Image (tube, rainbow, N blue to C red; front, side, top):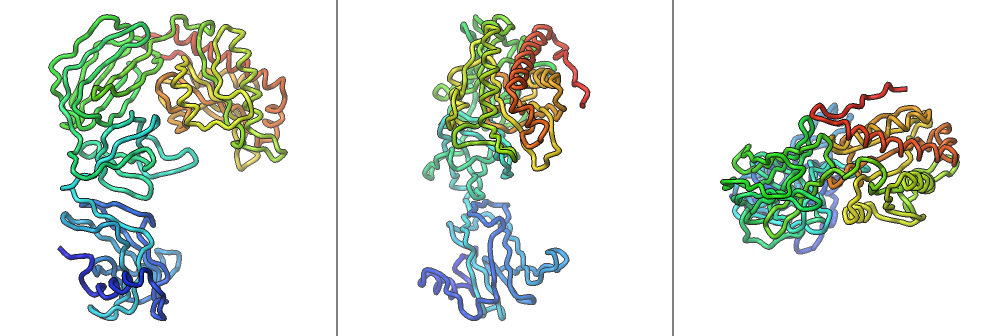
Length: 508
């Protein structure tokens, strides 16, 4: 095993460490920039690739890390630039590197370096023999599928309860890579986990025998485990069922006890699709799912399934209503100065009156021009537990020509609500922008109740804006959204094994 301190870079490294930083010498012009790719702090394990890039003079002999050669790229590959070098090293079992920058050198020959530089970022090699573990923290811990980001954040894999044990196998920037099972991984943001000291075992558990029961509000499935393992849930349709994968779990379940009080769940069963993934399948009695939650009680995983409301009418229904943005979070602003936060509150207040006139109880996330973080809105609704949630927004585009109304949902089981509202809002005469699924918005994330985001119209479009600022049109929007909820409820009554009865409207 080659040490980080061995080879021709040793003298350069010792000098730099003694000085505490690199002071450019005339020869340093041989290296303009030298960084890891991506240029963020990283943790890597065996089989991972350490990737680096250097910009310097053309025709040099350049090395990195353990005196490994870098390749100068053809100008055609880098937009005509010369002097761009890249290198890759596949981390091997037994390699060690403890949060150090990467050393780059321009070599005269095998032993003499003309110039050296360090990456600004640091790299750590993880040892499989000393697993790095972490615990989730907070009420909204979540996993991402990958490292991609946009204005809505990374694509979420799913939410987790607190104190779930995660096996970290890498890090890129501010996200840790999590090993879930063989050939399955996810990423977790640093701010929702707490690192554990070394010495722990990779999380794994046998399952105990499960139980299914019900009380006056919910049906429950409980799975005894030895530790809090990560999990993923999917609410599927045709037929409607909830599927929960527990990662790191292997069946020792010899029976599933069905107790009294069960009203929404069918015959619960389990599968073992791979040795370290335990899968629960929860068939639902109704085609329309009304929500579920997953949490730990000690080390027992508890799945809580909501039943349909007693009456599928607005009268007696509890509806969460979210007026998007507010306070310092202005949202979109039109060229003439109309602000999303003002428009959404005006529409939401009119919608509230419409729903209350029909007998619904309405719970608002904000009732004035105040700042409320989206995470706080989610937690408030989770605590208040509405039957449905509606989030009101106005849309915006860089092109003034883009216009129309749209609705958004994340989970396919909640699509019928978004589609019913979309069909009704089209009756205002707005053009159709679409009914959009898998939408990675905070208030579409909760699984506890069906929810829909309504982007009423584009404030960036002059025609849409003219309508949005008109109180009479705001009232019309409120009436159509209410009608959409009523259509959803009527469709839910008509649902059977064949599923949802509505059809996609023709696009304007």
